[in-house]
Length: 232
Image (spheres, rainbow, N blue to C red):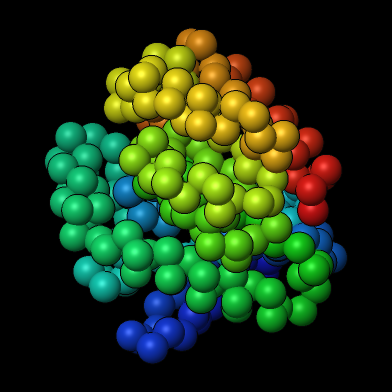
C-alpha cells in the first residue's frame, strides 16, 4: 500500500466497516465505487482499484463481507472457492446493496471527488452494481459477468442512468439464455450497452484466475473507460 491507497471507515446503523481507497495522481477525479467478487477485497480487487485510480478516478471498494469478518481475502483454488460461495450465501443481498449505498455517500463526501459517481462490480458485485443503478444511487453503472441479473429484470424499468454490462461467451456460470433474456429486456433502451466477449469464461477480467482472458479483459477495460469518459 502506498501513499495513494488506504483503508477508510464507512459507518452504518449496523456498524462500521472499511473500504479500500485508491487515489489518482493529484487526488481528484470522478468517483467509482468498486464492488468485489465473492472473494473479498483481495489483491486482485485492490489492483483493479489502483488501475482505475491510475486512469484518473477516485476509487472506493467496500469490504462487503464485514459481518462475517473484517478484511476477508480469498484466493481462487477449490478450498477458497468453497469458502467464497459460503460467504456469498451468508450475505443478505439487500444489506450488501445498502452497504454499497453507504460507501457511495462516503465517496461523495471525500475531497476531490467530482459531482458524478459510477459503480463497477464483478461477479456478485456485478449484480450489486446493477441493483445500485436500479436504486438511482449512481450516475452510471458497469457490471462484469453479473450473476443473477436475469432474476432481477423486474427492476429494469428503474434503471434510468447509463448501464454497461460485460459477459463472457463461454461463461460456465451464467447461461447464454440468461444473457439473452437480459439483452431482450433492455433491447429497446438506448441507455444500456451490452458486450459479449466470445472467447471469455467467467472471471475473464481477473489475472489471478485460470479463466483470465487477456484480450477480452483489455477490450472490456477499454470499453469501460470510454463509457465512463462519456458519462462522468
